[in-house]
Amino acid sequence: MFNDNVEFDGWNHYIIVMEEENNMTRVATYRRVSTEKQNADNQSESLNKQIEIFGWNKVMDYSETISGTKDTRPELQRLLSDARLGKFDYVMVYELSRLGRSTIQVINTIHELEQSGVHCFIIKNAINTKTPQGRMFSQMISIFSQLEIDLNKSRQQNAIKRLREKGAKWGTGNLLTEETRQKILSLRTNGLSYRKIANSVGCSLGSVQNTLKSVGV
Image (cartoon, rainbow, N blue to C red):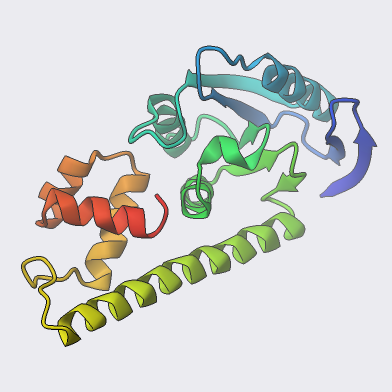
């Protein structure tokens, strides 16, 4: 059980003070910056301070300098792999944007961690996915993520319909099913390249790129 209190720590965000029965919680930290000109020191300082407040045990640290829009993020993929092996109980990040540059990327990462029995703690956003409030947040962004997919799908279908009404052609006429689109998203979340996804689902590279672009991935 958690007893949550809020303190302002002077870094323009809030520290959540939680008292947990088991202070041997194993935590992994993930830090990401987009360019070599940036550094992750502020993230490190905030993460380490929060871990000290909780009395948790930091067992892994993952850090990389790479844009969130890049096709692959090796350290994040290593983190997800280690999560499946049960190497830690929590992943702590400074803010949600470290996990992805779109709602779909973020929620897919959180869901994959939760499926491995690993919870997330996001300092700046004061989110702990183990608490009822955190689970409610995950459910809400899942809803908005699905809404984003549905809206993009609806816009795409309407665009295709207009093209066909005008007698125009849409590619080769072999449109992807929703099942295929979801498989593409899932494979992308697991870190596969566009080409490997295309080979796996049996579609063109362009179809993979258009599918992911349509949902902001």
